[in-house]
Length: 440
Image (cartoon, rainbow, N blue to C red; front, side, top):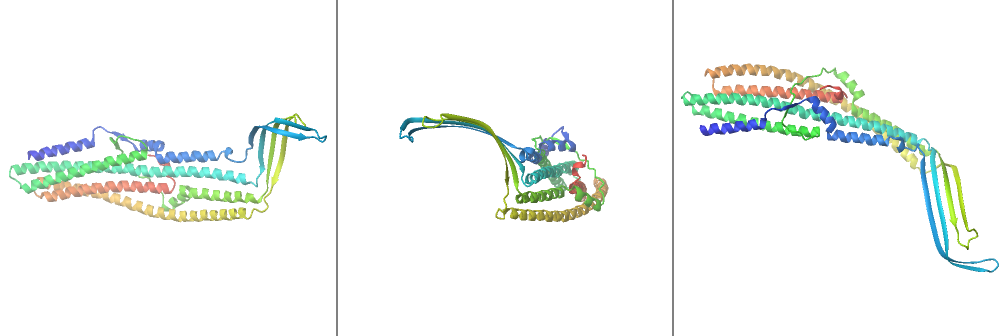
């Protein structure tokens, strides 16, 4: 018996070391703030928005002129022999020719068939699309964050229930030990009590391990390395949701996937117009200011020359027939638009079906939660009465253990139902585009 007591003490110390001592509380609001700043997916999405913002700049279009400069120098050294009309022959070895030039050039597209206008509108819609994609990443992060957060809360409450169960089992073991020592019970009852304490201790150790693992999983969502020695909030409040029809109407307006479909449709429409620009002429303005200087050898009629001046002109071009490539691009762009419209129709049907399923599941889970709460009350009353009768010796340890397990299972079931209902509620809020508007 001394060996068993020593083992039990070591097991209790191990459990205590896993549980830790004074712990800080990581609130839902604080966790959300940390994740919004550090979550890896959110950071990448925000960077993609910055890239789209840069692409949407006026500098990424053809609305601004281009300005360039050129400069050069040429040198030639050759042996030359020339014969004049008079028959006189002149020979020069190492005749040198030097020329220098510099210019500044300005080019501007006056008209390109409105192609750059619609390309710019595509860039604007692409930027808007990237913002929606970033919002979708944040919404997904919300669900991922609170799925993990509420898993920690669920394990926290289940762990507390396991602690209470272990305390009760230890008291039963002490009672069984005293009864055995005074000859009031058999060895079998004592052994059964020892087995139950060991099982409850193992269950608690496993729960604590899952507890720590879930906290490390939360660190990944938070995007930080945080000690697992903290607690989370276990209070859960439910939002009063509207009817299914109202939820569906909100989703048609605010669902981020549908809004992305709308942006893709707009981009496809502008793409058609941009490709149609190939049917129209283009006009451009070009001008330059240049300087040229030449130094010629004696064989040349002129010893040298220098010129400066302004050059300007307007160019008009019209690709009357390009082999049908523009027509093909326009036809393909129209098909791409049709595909986007088909995808939106599919998305609408999918979202309506998903909301219907999720809404019904939410209502069922709330009913289950209410029923499980009643089961906890019933199980608690049953256990209290069973404990009294067990103390009086009116029932066996097996009957007592069964009441104890029933109470633990009912408490576990109500915790599972509570957090399942909250997560389903968050899924509904995401489908209706309202998840970012809730306050934690």
